[in-house]
Length: 132
Image (cartoon, rainbow, N blue to C red; front, side, top):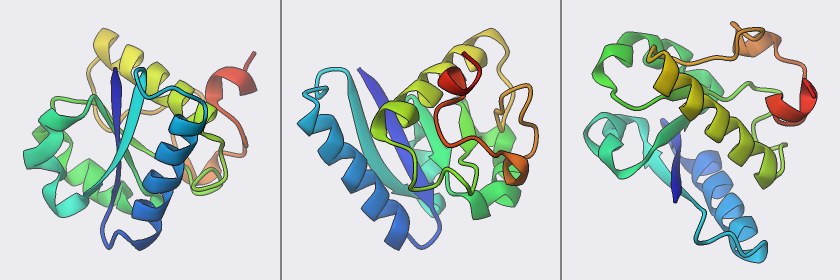
């Protein structure tokens, strides 16, 4: 099972996003394949063993760079254009691809080769589908 954390500072929109994604997982009957949870940024370092990958809210880019060496799981900044707009399938595909890239080349924060800056990402679907 792929366990994905949605990470934010305050947690209002991100906890709602994690809840929404988890409801979509249940609606699509993917409970045995994937699980979304919210973890506050202030606790993600000590709770990283609970998940396989951490998707950080866009405003945590500086946090991700500061604490990158504290992680042994991949961390990825959700591009602002995608935050809350992508369907659950796209979040899952991006998380799977980030995890696979990290296993081959562990470096944080992770990003797709053609997307080094989250603010410049213009796609509205998973990276996999966008580049298919």
